[in-house]
Structures are given as C-alpha cells and as structure tokens.
Image (cartoon, rainbow, N blue to C red):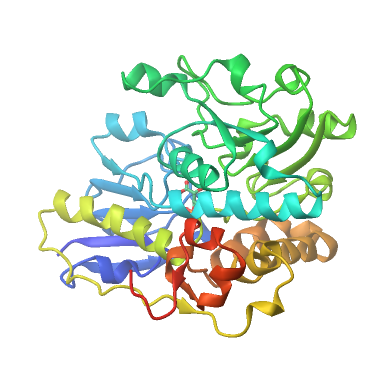
Length: 378
Ligand SMILES: O=C(O)[C@H](O)[C@H](O)COP(=O)(O)O
C-alpha cells in the first residue's frame, strides 16, 4: 500500500486520490511531518519548504513530492533531482483566481481614486498562465496592456515580449513571475530603486512573490510620491509581513489572490494525477461538478460595480482580518497570517457565481468578467 503524507489544507485531497492509498494528513504549522520514513509520497503547500536544510535525509521509501501550488521557490528542485525524487507542482491551477483578484482590486481602486481604467495602461511582468489570464481579463475592461516576458520569448518562438523600456512606460505594473534568484533572468528584486525611479507609477500590484519587489524601495517610492498606490498580496518577509509596508498599502491581503474553491481543487488534482501515474495506481472516482453559488436580491442594493464586487470577492474581508492581526497580535503575525490563509472560507470564482438578469442590465461588464446568469447553465 502506498502511504501519502499530505498537508491537511490541500483542498479535498482525499477525493482526488484512490481509496487504496493510505492517506495521512499533517498540520503544516508544525513543519514537515516527523514520521516521514513511512511515506512513499509527500504533498505540501508553499508554507513548508523542501531544501537540504529542511529535509537533510531523504527517507528511503519516499520517491514523490508534490506541491499544490504554481510557485516552486520553496522547493530546491536540483536537490530533489540529485536524490532521484519525482517532483510535481500545480502550474496554472489558480490563474483564473489571480486574474479575478487583479481586476477586482483594480476596479475598487479606480472607483476610490476616481480613475478611468480605460485611460490607463498596465504592464504585465511575467506572461505565463497567470499573466495570460490577467491580460485577457484586462482587455475585457478595455485596458491596454504591455506584456513583458523575455524568458518566454526565448522558449516560445511566436511569443514576443515587450522591451523593458516599453513595460516601464505603463501607468500600472502587475507581477506574475516566479521568484528566481539565479540564471539569465533572475526576478529577485526585479522592481528595484532604479526601475522605480524611472517614472511615476499610478499603481503597483504584486500577487506573485514578495521578493520580486524590493519592498524597502517600494515604500520609499511611495513616500516620495513616485508610486501613488500599491496593492500587495505577497510579502518579502512572509509570513512575517512588515507592518510599515502593510500600513501604506492601498490593499493588503494575506497571499490569497490564488485562493478559490476551483483553484484549490485544481491544485489538489494537478498533483494527485502525477502521483497516481508515478505509482501506477488506479484513478480516483471522478468528482462531480462543484455547485457554485447563486446571488438573490435586487441590484439596487449596489451603488456601483465596485460595491457589488466587494460583496462577491472577499478581498476586503481578508484585509480587515489582516489589519486586525496587525493591530492586536503583531507579535504573532506570522503564525496568524498562515492561519488566516488556511482557515478563511474559500470563495467561488466568477464563473461559479450566478446573478439575476437585472445585474447584467445594470453592469453589462459582468458578462465579460465571467459571471453566470441565473437559470442558464454554462
Ligand atoms: O504558487 C501558488 O500557487 C500560489 O502562491 C498559491 O496561492 C499558494 O498557495 P499555498 O500553497 O500557500 O496554499
């Protein structure tokens, strides 16, 4: 029998694995499980790093490690390769969720700052699965985009990246790169003092990884009014976010841009499938479609699209809880940051929220954003 140790917050992981598997859930707040010598496979999330320091001896039976995340900067993949461990991540699992976070926060920002989004350009740094979704959603809001991804241009011949100069001419920058410290295209501190002082930015959004932006320089540029606003979902010292940066952020959230029921189901499936293949197991019984959610009530309750999105996306609820942690439990903020991420109820993506017809009459863009109409299945 194959024994699989899995982070207890990997969403519905039991339903993506065959019943023949001996599944043992562990609490990631306690670090990697102590009795890993029993495991054939280990399934983690970003909160537990896999490096020669955290896992100095690879247990004899362990041949497969998966992370239910798109990002892999917490895993030393060369180390796993040397040790003959098969590794899988969940690339693209949360692309849609992150794109929805970006557009929701942009709409809320534009309303509050009385900005007209159609008049602003967005530079997308990193145009993989997430950046591509972000580009598509921004186009639906009729915003112009400048896509920057030179390593993708090297890998994929039809793809053309904008130049650095072009992307830095955008009014808004949004980050969707992995965090990479070496090689030809490092992203660590990609947005540094030099780039930040190249022009005035209206808004910087980071939902990628904290280290991609030099947080100290960002804060400085905000104080110098070179960056009007910034929205951070990821933090350089995560989970111990710096209160000084958090206080100045236009929105601050605890690394949840990619959190939705659908993204988390994808994450579990995207690592369960290669595990099944690796051990040549029979596939798990297929799961039915998740039901989604229906919103009742009159659209007149909402004065603006921003107000409606505020109800449908929990961005500001997460923010309020994060603020509460900073105000009342600053010394425990790292631990509580992770707890908030793990325990706050997940949202549905827009395609799994159905609204009455009057909502679409009032805000036609809701169709483009992917919301469903009550009574009309996809
Ligand atoms: O890399 C990713 O997929 C995202 O950052 C994701 O939100 C990470 O989720 P976690 O593994 O921390 O639950």
